[in-house]
Image (cartoon, rainbow, N blue to C red; front, top):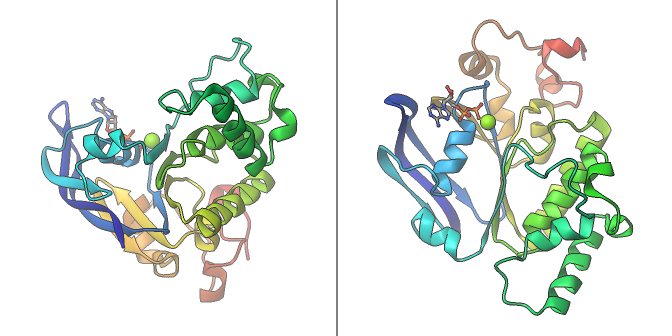
Length: 259
Ligand SMILES: Nc1ncnc2c1ncn2[C@@H]1O[C@H](COP(=O)(O)OP(=O)(O)O)[C@@H](O)[C@H]1O
Ligand SMILES: [Mg+2]
């Protein structure tokens, strides 16, 4: 079942074309990774899908509705690229998750129970009274995800959720996203730089740099011509063989790791 459709989408900001003629669909329960170079328009695409930016041409339909109407249903979760939680403000882990229920009609006690349930789900219940700012990057990200999930959305949009998390924590973060999809049938659309993890954890990849250079399975994405088209000739990828392409050692050359 189709949950998101982007059709003939062109977006201009300050008269500059940021996205051009983008077409793709996401089915319910899929995990989609949007990848591409900095400034390629990934965040702009998410903001347009969520109705914060008006298309110049084309349309977006989400849950069968135009973006603004869809967002009002409360069935859409969004974790923006930058975490705006004030660093010094002494807000507890539980408070952060409760923020996710500000528009909910539940009673105070029901909200509390729900928040605790989702903290438990992300493995952070024991931290409920701790200041959010004291947590590690990975722990903060789990709590932020609980804040998004507590409203029980059908589809979530995560903009670079694993940035600032170490590699081990990243792995468990992606495992967690998979569990989320398997247990709750949530659709996940995430922007990530972590191309290596993409092969293992996602169903579809969108390669975006103004144009949608690629949309399909991770296996097809890891072909050299697609990657160089997307990232440009200056990025050299360590791809030694077909088997290697989908293995966990696949990395950009900055990590200097070979298979
Ligand atoms: N509000 C804005 N006004 C004008 N240009 C913008 C605005 N927001 C982003 N841009 C430009 O759009 C391009 C894509 O940005 P962005 O969507 O943030 O890329 P990404 O998330 O892939 O790094 C960049 O060139 C950026 O400078
Ligand atoms: Mg971005």
